[in-house]
Image 1 (cartoon, rainbow, N blue to C red):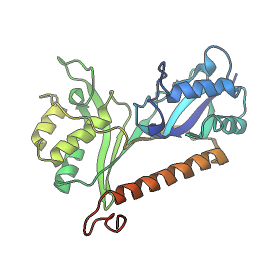
Image 2: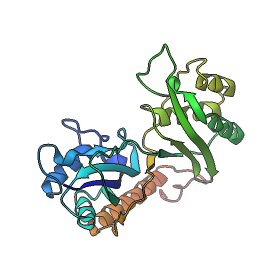
Image 3: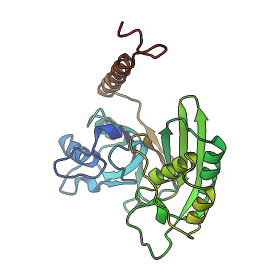
Image 4: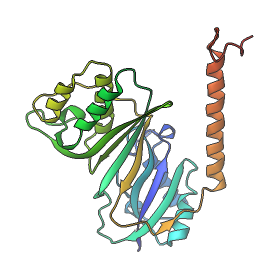
Length: 276
């Protein structure tokens, strides 16, 4: 039975997270049901499905990765997977060995789309630069030991500014639960003047622990899971069901924007003419 590594993405707003849960609509639950429904995988283990990264509720993915067994060839496999749900996009694949470890990626890249900063751009950039190298992440995760340091190697954190807001990119090989959202939370605290840079530096060095807010999940995207080997097959889609879903979502967002504009009357405000 061939085993495949597949690159895939999804809109986190459509699911209650990755892991299947009774009574909840999750990416894994919908995927497992679709694998059986479309005869992509068989048996009680449903193709020995494994995923590179488990995203929380509300978190989206552009380039997550999964491994599964399927008798389908590369092109039919991508076509069949993209028929499971218009909210999922399977974009590339390659055949792998049976013992391949899908979680052993070279690097994971997360991107956070944030609102414009209210404080100092220099302070935000300085806070981001502190997250480089091997750092103690006890202040940036959940359920970690309190009596000893927990280390992770972070390649980089960068903050880019634009008229539309901030874009925060985080690169590391592995993360503890909630780590990216707490990194963003730390940058928010520095930006607001509530967290001195020296305290953040000391926390990353393991000298103290911080209590940090966790940033909202909806603006977070698992942008890419990187492997040493290249993808050998690419999806030529999207198909018509995916295009229809994408179009409907865009129209819904536009309608929502117009509703919000209509609710903001007053001179100089976007909805001032809508209510006249």
